Length: 319
Ligand code: F6P
Image 1 (cartoon, protein in one colour):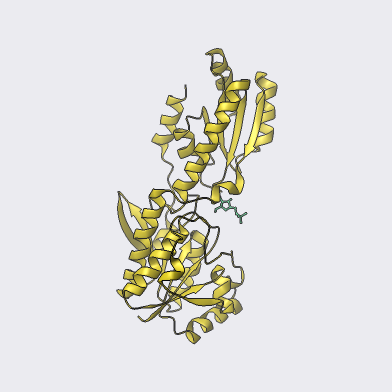
Image 2: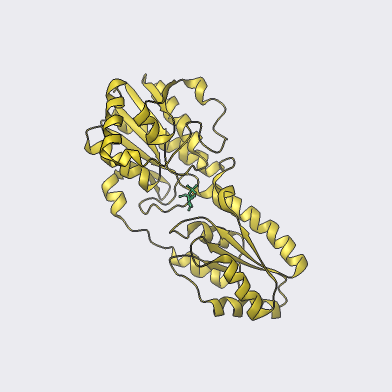
């Protein structure tokens, strides 16, 4: 193993830079040449890459986004694009690749590994939707961003006696809504794994109002119904003025939390070590505070389980 490439793919996540730094510095420590590939698999297809040294990752551990830039590549999944990527890997004598991203990125990693290119995946996505790991890099930072927003909305909602629907990201996974809802003391949490009953939400708003609650925060994961329609229904049925805040891509940016920087540093280092041990087709994760690795295929076949106890806890505590 002499030369390895590193890329970030999919949607960015806070902590990607910390992971890139760890990959580069661990590679250099082991006398490897490190190539930083620009804009994910697209950069691999187009040969958009540069040598990285210790200096090129200085001052980035605390920065959101990704210095390697990012893309969701469609070309990589078609035979022509994939062939071009293999050619670039060959021309640059890359002995292995480390890819940072979510499930789509890992499917690309599996393809490379099946084609004989040693490839390791590092889980970076704010959604925390990968079933094999307790946490993905970026998730906790996104949760912090959401609870900061909830805190501010609670201030103004209390002043006016309003309800607030806060729409958060997460695609098919309700973890951002669940964790931020619990930590932010939300009255209701709406997630795709469970769905919601509009009348039950309205009853809770009225019960809260009758108990003297000045605010009512409803955290809703994107894609579960329509936040604006829900707000309208709450207003109609309860008479409580209800505002909507869609947090959107704000959740994807910002300086990574300590948790994400630590996770990224540990996984970045371990990914290089796996390549040095001639491992391929594996992804990193964390279970019970340990860094683990397993086959990509196995990881992608698992089904994400909802932390039902956490959901029930939030429900009980919000009464
Ligand atoms: O997968 C991460 C994520 O932020 C999702 O939560 C969201 O649905 C999606 O990406 C948005 O993607 P894009 O930035 O491409 O619009």
